[in-house]
Picture 1 (cartoon, helix red, strand yellow):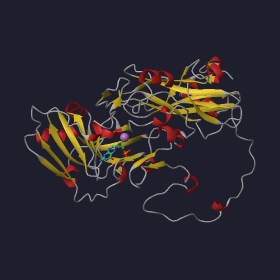
Picture 2 (cartoon, helix red, strand yellow):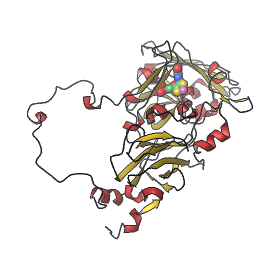
Picture 3 (cartoon, rainbow, N blue to C red):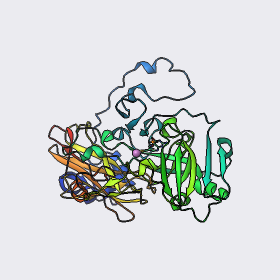
Picture 4 (cartoon, rainbow, N blue to C red):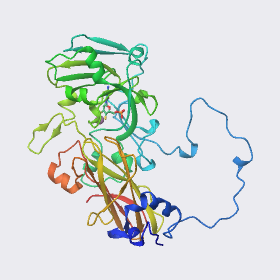
Length: 426
Ligand SMILES: Nc1nc2c(c(=O)[nH]1)N[C@H]1C(S)=C(S)[C@@H](COP(=O)(O)O)O[C@H]1N2
Ligand SMILES: [Mo]
């Protein structure tokens, strides 16, 4: 079908193996898709609908705090405790089961070094001291009077995507491989307001942030970042931050590696330099080929992953499919995501779904006419600073086999002629 607004050639193939023009996912394009104009719909002709039991009796009672459908119970984080512990380790967001850009609070990834402290907000305080004119201590009640801001931003562990550093591709879900990234609306007080009140001395150039967990996690943060966009986050997607994500408050450093975003924040000390804590010396440093390590590699790099189709989500025969995925960068906004269906030989630009926000997950979509044969799909993001996500093969060649953190390389999924999806390296 062809209309003046949407000529035939524009939903024709724009790259190898059936990738269609991104216009299909922009304004009138979506309307045409839903009208079935491409002969792609999988719905069956209408017939009388069954009188299911829920039509015949009143439903369940009201409740004080909602729950999702029991039919969604399989949508869950993959939980990987550190051996011999229950509360330490990581749990990963099931990216393959989610849409849009917001991670539901119950599925936000978790990374704890000494379990989740059960903090009484009446007793919790934030101390600001060190190189300041007036050391200050804030109760939760005091903090609630300060001006707040809300921002939608991602959080990613620098160890995310480590499974794909293995020499053979692990056959695991998208969330298992890449699910220590999540995205929330965070609400809290800009740290700069509290630092201004304490009066930062001219010798201060860093700060030390400390958590109230049994690991007493501490990280050094440049003062410039603290004054720029650091947030003392109190709310996550509208409700108080969950215990697992830092209740009653966490330091949130947009675009920085997750480890620096100290949860259960209890103390900020202004200092004249970094403090060389455990988490910035023996851990969270990047070992190079020559045996030296990079320190304070805070910024998370440009990255993307196709969440659907992905491992465990088989295709049901030839036809039109929606490729959907997420892209993000610590540098600001995502500018472009390209998708290939032939393992990186040819690429086409995906549609970016609004909103495209700085330091947030960005949803991309692409229409794909799958011919039922073998295909390898892969995505590649570019950010507004011009950084391009590297192919896995280039990333490994550039960094060496000892690389452990900050894997932002591409994820490829191979589809075999049965429609089954597997993890492959390209
Ligand atoms: N106090 C404290 N803060 C912490 C941690 C911790 O164990 N203790 N883990 C860090 C790491 S490694 C990451 S990736 C993020 C994880 O945040 P989340 O659990 O809210 O996803 O918190 C960081 N802040
Ligand atoms: Mo982390």
